[in-house]
Image 1 (cartoon, rainbow over the protein chains, first blue to last red):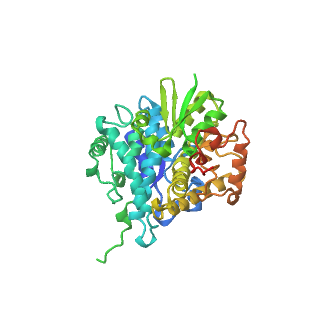
Image 2: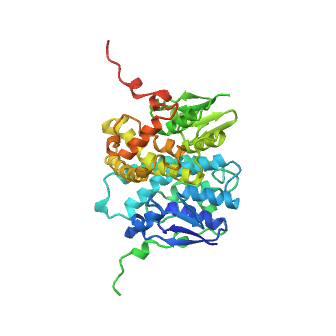
Amino acid sequence: MTAQLWCFGESGNAYKAALTLELAGYDWSPVFVDFFNGEARSPEFKAINQMGEVPVFREGDLTLSQSAVIQLHVAEKTGRFMGRDRNETLRWLMFDNHKVSAQAGPARFLLNFLPAEKRPLGAAEFLQARLKGALQVLEAHLTDREWVADADPTIADLALCGYLYYPEPFGFDRKDWPHIDRWLQAIQGLPGWKHPYDLMPGKPSDRAPKEDI
Amino acid sequence: MTAQLWCFGESGNAYKAALTLELAGYDWSPVFVDFFNGEARSPEFKAINQMGEVPVFREGDLTLSQSAVIQLHVAEKTGRFMGRDRNETLRWLMFDNHKVSAQAGPARFLLNFLPAEKRPLGAAEFLQARLKGALQVLEAHLTDREWVADADPTIADLALCGYLYYPEPFGFDRKDWPHIDRWLQAIQGLPGWKHPYDLMPGKPSDRAPKEDI
């Protein structure tokens, strides 16, 4: 039975779940959510997830939302990416969710997907300053280790990288963070790795105004 | 063996762990972290938690950080507050961490614990708007149910309420949210419930400028 993941390319939170599924060799297929036309807030989608968020995972009778819950499920079911100390893995996964992605996601959205005149004053700068503080913790942690929570990659790595491969500028440049850069390169080297725009349907160029031919 | 929890009264994230320990009947005692004098960023504290954050839990050889990890540990060890469907409990706990507390905590800090001249322009308003959206999801969810993730209280309830009992204004008023208000009242009715300023050491009035006598 093929599992389904409601997602779209621009969502780093969906990417965490999609990448975990893909690298764990799960039988899954994406279901495109047209976020930029409001589908995530539609009554039809809210019937699937009242939180109005992707990702949503469905496999038979089981429906899960929140990327961390989906990642945990996949890790437990496949025996992949949990690490030897689950609590250490989850500690870094939680650090991602509330300190890294919680700033990177909204900052990237405000600066790239919202018209400049609609951007709340000062919000992106505030988020970027907080993101920088969190990345400093991650950079220091990776100074003398290859992976975040164990000697091998775990769902914590696959959460923390969620927004860090996107090309749109939001205040993160790999060149500024040598240890994070090396670690991102190592994740890219895992068998089956794909960029978010290759792993999930939907990307900014799909929505760009078309030039007259 | 008494477990230790590094915490301080103003931290809603620490409160989630402390309240879970207390209501589960755990043998624990608080260790005060003097956050407002920079202790969380001191080398001594970072040796305990490199993330520079409370709460930190220690019991013998086991050290945990991130409130969700501590809550999960306590729930698993005591058999309390996990709910019948762990994934449903964790889904709401994650929703708290990245959608509710991730806005409420910084908004409250900016508006109450930072001098007005140091507040980043527009940041609190942005956080409050996002918090309102998350509280609307919670309010709708609680319309026809007593607890968030099960027929009984779970660690999801004890996470989501983390910042909602504090008196300092940050854009949440119980009167505006009747179902959330009723649910908070129900949590207050659980045997052993304590307000954050009664459960953990440290509160704003400890730091208020002293009047001349």
